Image 1: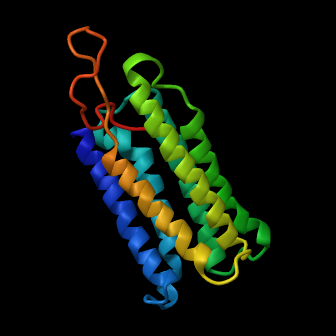
Image 2 (image 1 turned 180 degrees about the vertical axis):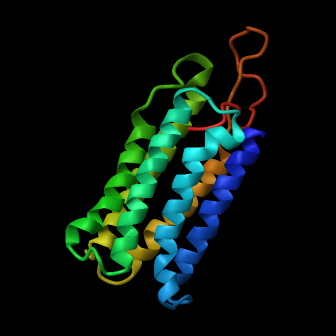
Image 3 (image 1 turned 90 degrees about the horizontal axis):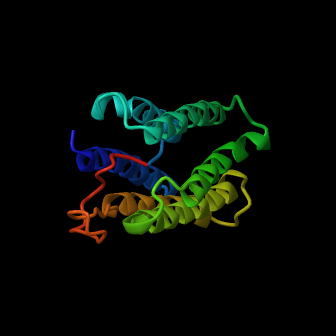
Length: 196
């Protein structure tokens, strides 16, 4: 399947969950079931990332496939913890720190990794660093919300608005290629490497 379509499926799914979570944070969605939205979103994302390379990329796309599977396993684990928190099984404050720490770790991975190094790959590096910085900031705001450090509702809404920005960055991600060995950028092509 075309990598652009795969990223649009993932981005669209994350955005759909984010809008539901925003509605809940703004008090427009209620009911006990709405408390399960975040764990369901994390488990869904985890499964998508774990099986992404098998379902959409013919079984392998190198180091990025491994990264996706690691990120998917982390999302599943955090989803289980958030389920425990939503159900009232994990009430200690420490459990609320796991999700923001996981988000920040993913953001740092995007900021620091160097799989697109050199030459015409600078565009991808810049995009990864911007995406990573947004994710780190989002994780910090999410931590303020999860740990109940904010006065009012700004952190509960703020981290979700930053997640919308992350979705937009994923939708807008492009990859530059080199044309005919000339070393320059040819027309920008959306996400041809098929993942992060």
